[in-house]
Amino acid sequence: MDLKEYLRKDLTEEELGLLKASFDVIGSIAIIEIPKGLEKKEKKIAEALMMLQSNVKTVAKKVGIHKGTFRTQKLKIIAGEKTKETETKENNVRLRLDVEKVYFSPRLSTERQRIYEMVRKGESVLVMFSGCAPYVCVIAKNSPAKEVYGIEINPIGHKYGLENIRINKLTNAHLFQGDVKKVVPKLKKKFDRILMPLPRSAEDFLETAFKASKKGTMIHFYDFEKEEDLPEKAFEKVEKACKKARKKHRILCWKKCGQYGPRRFRVVVDFKID
Ligand SMILES: C[S@@+](CC[C@H](N)C(=O)[O-])C[C@H]1O[C@@H](n2cnc3c(N)ncnc32)[C@H](O)[C@@H]1O
Image 1: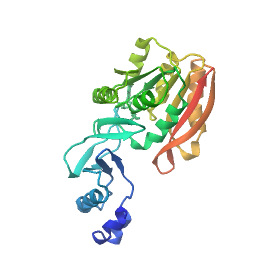
Image 2: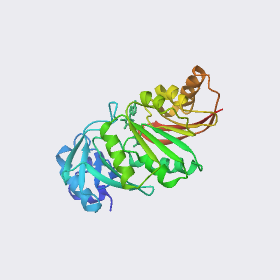
Image 3: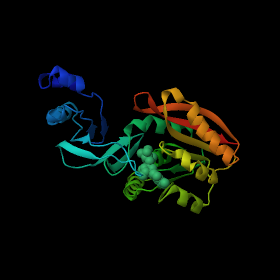
Image 4: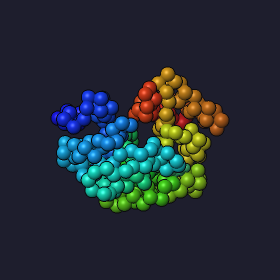
């Protein structure tokens, strides 16, 4: 039975129409949106969700959008255990995090799989903006990479990243806390693959990515675009930065890997430095 069906006896037709049927579950925490007009029924909705999903022990509602440098979102617990810390599993790894203090989206697990399946034996991989290290752990665990580096500015995200490397017993993963623009030059390394999962402003970091790239480096550039601008606007950002840095490149593919609003998408552009 789905949430709407279950709540049929507690909500009016109008309220059922407002109810959002989709929600995210991260470990034991469900994160839901309570639309205006349903606040008085939020407890009933949360309890119904816990009845329907036995793995959910806490229900938190979104209080704001993802914002700020750390891309975090304010949440309010409306039912169940009073904790925002949890452990989730995806792509053969365990990931611990605080869902309010660290950015994490379970919806990106198939994109993480797409990436690790591309990684070849012996690669050095750099994950810029690594958060609690989901990409780092998933690649280090499932691919034949030689080493995976991650850089994250949020000290709490970095702390969970270190913990996640430890609990997954990964010996080829290395995390650094700080601003990508400051940390990358200090690494004095060139990578075979660079991931840039900061869609709102990855464009501003392409020059830094080029400093850690060499001929043949594959860059996965994430971006937010409106449906009508796809893929041209995303390609333009890559081309403009390559032109400025005088980098020859080849765009290999692009794809949608998420939606953040009506007709607005998260996209990834894979391109190679020639
Ligand atoms: C959209 S989140 C992605 C996190 C992680 N890769 C994931 O998929 O769960 C972007 C992350 O970049 C971090 N960040 C933002 N600006 C940064 C910078 N200049 N240097 C390093 N990390 C940064 C944020 O704190 C946030 O954790």
